[in-house]
Length: 390
Ligand SMILES: [Zn+2]
Image (cartoon, rainbow, N blue to C red; front, side, top):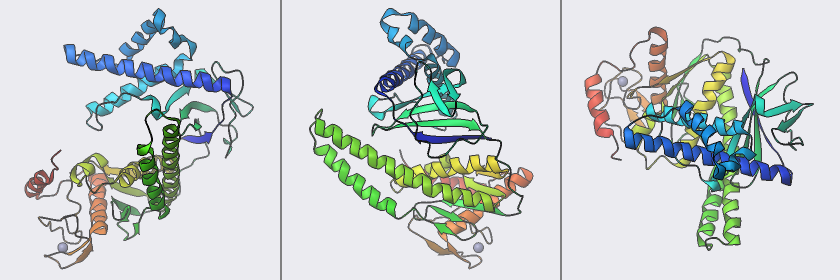
């Protein structure tokens, strides 16, 4: 099973200069290829794929004024083109927006596959670097594991991180259980489960967010291009990093527990969910946490031999009574509790939704049945009306 550990590292001035140039070239190649692909589409409606951009890269490297591309390892440049290909595949499949240009202030990353780095005596040597990277090994790479890919990242706060991917043979499937759980990802409570539990965002996140707002305000008052502005920008980036770390830590505990206790985990597809939800309510916190939760659940289920199901079609999880199947016409977002007019069961909105999600997911896993209930006509009609105008 593939695993990745992330560490902070401190480059020597020489390494830093090389890595900055590498990130610059990765960004340049990515943006140039994106530009070419966009142009080709507008001018002749033709789709350029990875292999064409790869031969373009070979041609660019021969141009005199683009000679700087030869100063860095070619592998991250190629990997960048692969990432662009993935971004396009996701776009064509309707999962994401059109790929964006990469900007310098975002920092950036460079991926080194096996041919572009060495792992020797527990040290990482990147291509074209003489010295090993000064990595703070917060936890060891398990004995006998060979890194397959390393990714170097420069955070906007100017911190360097390295993520090391390796195959870990020690990950084994957990003992089988017969428990299954449905999960509703929400805003009021981050997670509501069909077991009746509700889990919220960690409390200190709120404090971080207040700090972030103050730092943003401070940044906006600084003169463009000034030293103080740069300082304020880094402060904002640092708080962002803190928020991400805190959130990830919290979510890791949550998803590990869910995967340990259950054989089958069902969630709603986020693309569908985001379309239905009222965008104004969906704060950045929930957005980022939702995708992180589903990402962690998906790979941990793969690791531990669990079944992970995403309901990929629109399903009236909030409007359906999980007890009798009655579907109410309207369920405004401010209603947190309701009583079913048919069977008189009292429901907590999110817990009820998670029970429906579980039922729909089990239907799919057992017989491959359609997730859409019988009253599909009326469901469709309400779904149409609900679509936000964007
Ligand atoms: Zn009912």
